Length: 95
Image (cartoon, rainbow, N blue to C red):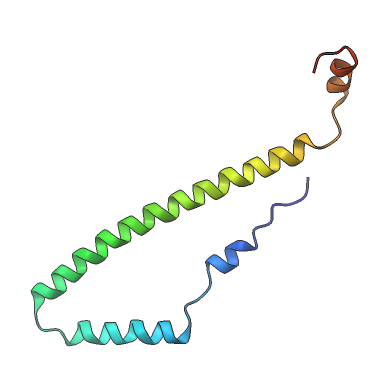
C-alpha cells in the first residue's frame, strides 16, 4: 500500500502574509490603546465565541478529511489482487 499523501497539510499550516501580519499588529495596537475596559471585555467575549466556533469547524473538517482518506485506502485495498480465499470463493461462485 502506498503512503497517504499529506502534502495538503502544508497549505493548511501556511503562515499569514506580511499584509495580514500588519493588519493584526494594527488591531493589537488599537486594543492596547483602548482605555474602556468594557469594550475590551466585549471584544474578549466575542473572540472566545469565535474561537469556539472555529475550533469546532476545524475539528469537523479534519474528521471529514480522515473519513475520506479512509475511503481512499479502502478503495485502493479493494482494487488489489484478491486473496487466495477470495479466489477460492469466486471459483465456487460465491462473490
